[in-house]
Length: 101
Image (cartoon, rainbow, N blue to C red):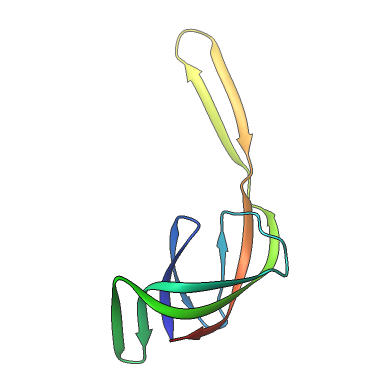
């Protein structure tokens, strides 16, 4: 069974046993329950939520870390102005334990 869920402002296609990352900092070992899905795929049957489907999805946070560094550069031509910033986003890796309808 697969499902499309919305979590932390992003949509994710998940299946049981999959791992995926979100842009939030959640403690490792925390269990997360989601009760709404946007789309549900079960073998050949596809159910589209209008706007949502009531399901029971259990997720577990397996790891919390920082994503790779992104370099941000600002400059103005012919003025000698340059500014360099770096950013590392906090991410959490979630594992899908169970999807029930």
